[in-house]
Amino acid sequence: MSGKQHSCIGTVAAIILGVGFTVGQSGAINILTVLLFVIGALVGSLIVDIDSKKSKASQQFTRIVTIIFWVFLVFVVYQKYLSNNALINGAMNFTGIKSLLDKIAILFLIIAKTYIKSGFALMILCVLTTLGKMSPHRQFTHKWFGTSLFCITAYFAFENKIAVGFILGYILHIVADKTTPAGIDFFDFKLPLQNRRGKLDF
Image (cartoon, rainbow, N blue to C red; front, side, top):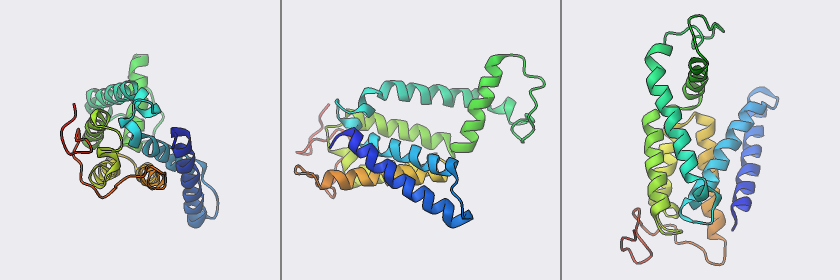
């Protein structure tokens, strides 16, 4: 099954979940909430195939991890200075900020504080993604152990709606692969880098 098919399945499911969630809570559709579910589902549905050289996730791996690393670095470097800034407390006040870099850092920090629950969990997710990329196709990332690690880490790394979307997209990818002619043995235990025979494959 192609990445487009997996992403379409995840997106449709996330839209249905997001619409149902917001209508059930407030009686109206909240576009931002639906978008957060969709973003999570897109990432979750594509990251499973990080172990395939042909997948979009694998092709964009270096760029994505680099962006995550630098955003996190900016967050760490500026955290102490910006944590007491009036903007973080809701006041739109740029007093004392002298450069465009500071403003960009504030934007990253706002995004990080809003949508990332744990920078440590995010780094663990990057490590899992790296291990997944190095593993043979349809092994570690497609088995119950890898699925559990990715989903649990995403839950602690991201804001709740993104995390739920991620988990939804990831699990639907597994279910979709299970229904293909090749299928997958989801309950087989595989560590990172292990091939079908259980040997390490570097």
